[in-house]
Every structure is written in structure tokens, then in C-alpha cells.
Length: 113
Length: 113
Image 1 (cartoon, helix red, strand yellow):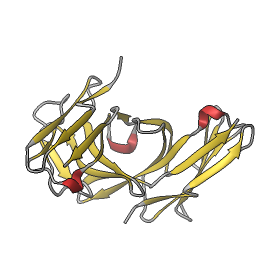
Image 2 (image 1 turned 60 degrees about the horizontal axis):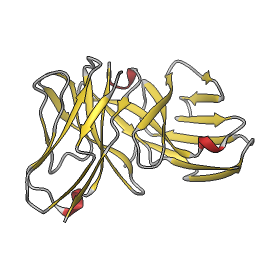
Image 3 (image 1 turned 180 degrees about the vertical axis):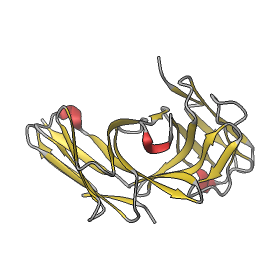
Image 4 (image 1 turned 120 degrees about the horizontal axis):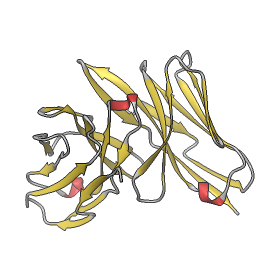
């Protein structure tokens, strides 16, 4: 089954404690991206990757890092989480950016206290 | 600021009625997509319309695109309670050779049985 898998689904952490949210897709997609969703702000793109070893900033990259060492995985790293990073995070993948349908993961609800 | 903005932000209709949502964007696009999100879950792709297309249909969904007005509309005909969800438009913009994807804030649709 074609899918995008995010882990964990829920996470509560403390300020400053490094964390990683994993994202994996099994569709051999080149394009992957991370979004955060906040009430009244919709989805905002954090980082995206056009292909392996090719990443670029989205609209809200501050406080986040990503890596794309292999095609299927695109982890999101918060080196020093802060409460303003409390949000619902989605990973998505597609064959070619917005030229084709994007598949979304089920989301990771992160709370930073 | 958001590239895509949906209107209205909330819509409540009776089952069987048609629902129309609009999306406006600021810069030229190559593609526009509509997605649906059930509460707190991942987005699901509905329709992709390319900049050289004016209208597309998929089941009870009809999407139009007016590039001169930089706007798109999503029409759901004969709505059902199961159509209750948030609907987002997404547009792609090219920046410095890379492709960014921008989502609007969304329209929250409630279909009353």
C-alpha cells in the first residue's frame, strides 16, 4: 500500500531537548516536504527536498533542520525545541512537486512545554 | 503572507445542497490543487488543475481556474454529511529554481444531515 509514515504520532517534550520526527515513503517519490499546521494559519511549508541531498527552506524554516540521505526518508530535526514549535506537523511526498498529487502522512502532534 | 487564501473560512449547509469554496492567489502558478482534511488528519488529494486548464470534474467535484483573476473555485454538488471537512487549495511557485508549495488557510465545511 502506498503510504507516507510519520513517527511518532504524538510527542510531548521539554524545551531544549533535541528531537527527531521521522518520515518515510514507499512510492519512490523524489519530492518530499514538511509542513506545520496551526489554527488560523493553515499549512506552512517548513522545508522541502527535490531529491536526495537536495533540500531548501520553505516559508518557516527557523528552528528546524532536515536531511535527505536516501530517497525514502526525510526526517525533521528540532535541535532545541521551544514552545512556539508546538504544532501539528505533516510530511508529504509526490513524484514532482505540485505537478502531481501529494501524499500526506497522518501527522505528528508535538507539544513543547 | 499566504499565497493561497480560501473563502469563506467557514461554511455550513444542509445535506443535498451545493457547496462552493473559492481560492485566490497572488503570483502566477503552474498548477493548483485542492485537498480535503478530516479533523486533525492528513490531507487527501482531490483534484489537480493545470494553469492551461479552465475546468475539471471528478465525481461530485467541479474545479474551475481563472488565471486572469488568479482564482479557483471548488464546487461540491449534492453534499453529504460525510463531506464535512476542511478544504484547502495549494499552489506552486518557483523561486530561485526551486519549487515551493503553498497552502491556503482552508475552508471549514459543515454539512448538516
